[in-house]
Image (cartoon, rainbow, N blue to C red; front, top):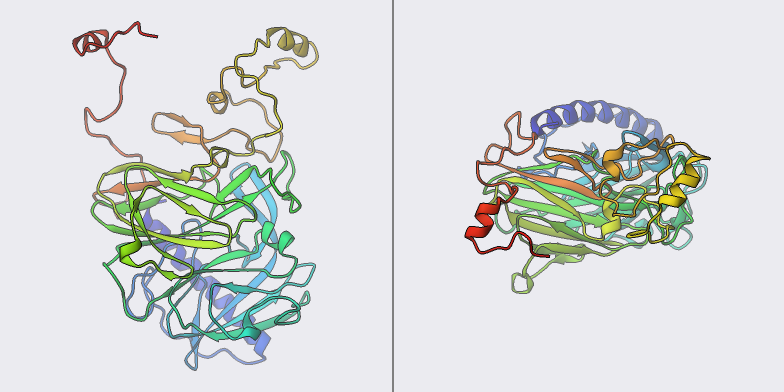
Length: 436
């Protein structure tokens, strides 16, 4: 979907969700909702500042009531699709995981209603936000947990700007693992630093989903096999479309549950400009191509996109760029499995041992797989199958980023694609074609 279509469809969805939210808040308050204030155009926050884009998601509708920004989060179980062919029963906010991005401006006061539709109690912790202790959302320490079926309210002032998160703080092992997480963006009251042309929000997450099942394993500690950006795995991750020469901000969040993620972007370098603790002084910034995002932290990076193309963006832990791999396998590279294959085919026609010459070709073989699974599938690219999956997306740098075809594959200028070398050119350059 191109950016224009995405913004148009997001606007329609936001209007519908806003109406439902207002009705739910009115029921919780026992009042009639006030007349909503005019909403800013998509992509622009109140005060004229650039709003954020959440690929595969959106921002929580907020309405102003007597000077307070009011929103509503409903935490429940729902069916969630990581990519076509793989669906699970997840827990999260407003029917999505991560939940909608909460986007506001420094100095505003938030009133957030939380309705619990889970089968157990819950709370919401506003991760990184400085607020009164009783609004911090830690079960039994700062509040009683919200029982199933009840709606509670949190209210606090936003005293600092930056990138933060929200998540359950009751039965954290289960509720966070099943998807009760989201991002918070607080814009500064007065814009700071160089003007940014695009502002994206990406939250990583990790899941254990056994092949053929639909319930993520919340008890897993080490062997995660579905790694997501904003709740999706490639090829379902929406690309980040930006303009050549534009300054781009990406806000990265990680609520785990167990792994850190070195996020690497091809074709450019960036600077880390902030953490969830605040701005990084200019004197402490340095150029990077990989940003380590620890569990329970946010990192904000900025760069100027100078080179047009389709640039990969992914976690550089190699297993995190795959989908539903089985990790309990023996090492088979270089093994002669012909005799084993013959014996197995007498029991399972068509059987073939995988991995004796590497795993890269498995995505093209399209072998039969169990229902509700995507092991080693990857997705289509302009030159074949992109065998990566999982925590992988594409930064599309375009001269005309808002054109209807900006989301298409990049058209490389002639002579700028790696190609088969000829023997004549190798000899002319003194390269031995028979070297081993």
